[in-house]
Image 1 (cartoon, helix red, strand yellow):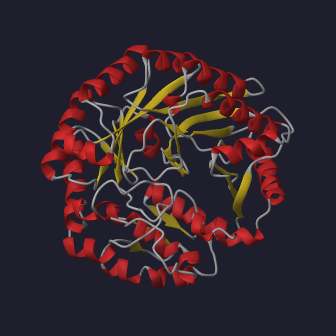
Image 2: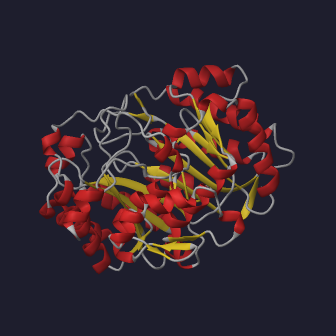
Length: 454
């Protein structure tokens, strides 16, 4: 890896799970009614063929992990589960009441927080409640995030019986010093146990989340973590760059000194080491930050060019409409984004009053829609084209000018009306997408709001 390029392009930038990215949403022009109109339009256009996706945010955690930048609620009071589940189901019913026909569910993902904070009974109540007014798509897929320390065999069996076939376990790192710094202590033996339970029960896709760039990580500790991962051979691996955003309220990223973080070339060396080890083990790199065995749906989606990216990250399922339920959850109708209020108390209060708890969002312009597709193409397929008139937009010259330096550095190959990212330029995908980010060009934030790109 060219270290001078890393130094040059390692700047703050979005992860592009959406376009426009959240800091550039036009909230002044947004209303809940406008959002609901886009929701209804998208539902009518896509429900019959594609079905819809549901993301359920289950925010409770018993303790705070200091690497985490998610919206969560720290508590040991499991009595909070009951009302929260009731409110999620009530929110779902508020959306169902706006639908002209039965929703066809293609995808459900339980994220957090810690979904396995919730009891098996409450998770069963949740899923049955979501499915009751719905039909299932012929090609549906259900997945959830599990904490190795509190995911029980009962959790796994209950959710499998309800149709779940994918589970993702948050590992992060196996080194004791790193685990202590990020306040996420779990043994390899515990991870091995839940992974083997999952396989025995029948889960067809097991994923492990690893993070590079954590405090006190070294090439040696990274190698040891992946050597242990090799013994369990999960179907997928999410190999995320640690997003250091301590200025964001509530993330808790203050459990260590910033000098303890690997930076620049050192951090990138962690990724290159991990990538090589994973490649040697037979994993294929998928888009950005993801690896999968050739037997996994994510790899097959890459080969078939059906890979999709949304607020849940990369997925093998493409749906135009994704409804986010729960505190802070984000919904995506393709034509608009909407985010729910960010505290449990406010969320439950608004839903109890019979209102959809959206507090901000963005309605996409025609230009937004075109740029969004280009960024999605680059993120998923490493190429895009504006040869088709539907993907042309007036500011393409501004984009190409913004990417001129990247072209000189060999990060992109530009033809008359197309752009490709060479395999060796994958580490710079976020930077390349930034070239298309017209809203970022027109209004750069005065303070840092994004994590570093590399």
